[in-house]
Length: 270
Image (cartoon, rainbow, N blue to C red; front, side, top):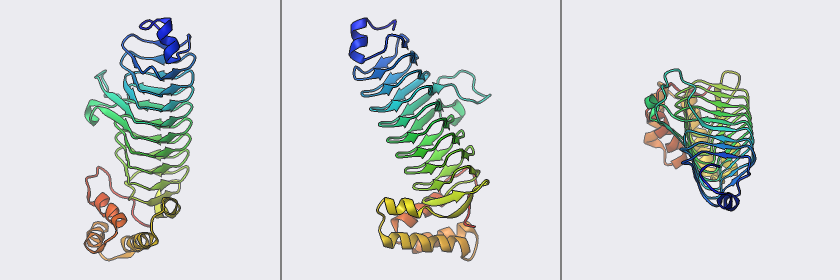
């Protein structure tokens, strides 16, 4: 605790065994448990709690009321052989729960320079978020799942345990990936993906119902999925036709996602 005196440490509730490097910005409302290590470029906002044995390094900002559990390593350099020590960032939003042994890396120059985590996420024990990933709000990543570099995970997505998301893959809002699934291509919003080599097997109907989506919209999504699976023309042609016909904002989410920019192809309905 070289940059703060004992009185400040007691105000911030820092355990005396914690190591806080000079330059770190720690809000007075933080709680830092035993044997934590915080680097000089770290910013911890109000209400952040580090349970114990947590490492936060790099140019990392942790949002308000986020809790990080023991043995997590947050903000270390990317696992990318092209990385050459450039200054890149990790930005974590508010009210996230980051459980034991989670790793989150900073970005790379080639990927935009920032890894970003939204608000209200749950990152369960042992999961990994790689460089330049862009994670939305209310995302759940279950135990030991891994998100590779440059992934885009939109709001309200659930990634099942022991799953792997390939680099540059996009997963649309409200989608769910089953456990032990390898996802190598983009997943449409509200899609359901499962299997050792992920296949698009349907819609995340349970998630839609839990969210309170109207029956009419769920019916429209069912019809849209059927059209994407069995309609005339290519997958993109069917999607464009769907966009011309739909009045559902949920179906329009799928259309916009498919027609948007992507570095991967799509998982299409089986």
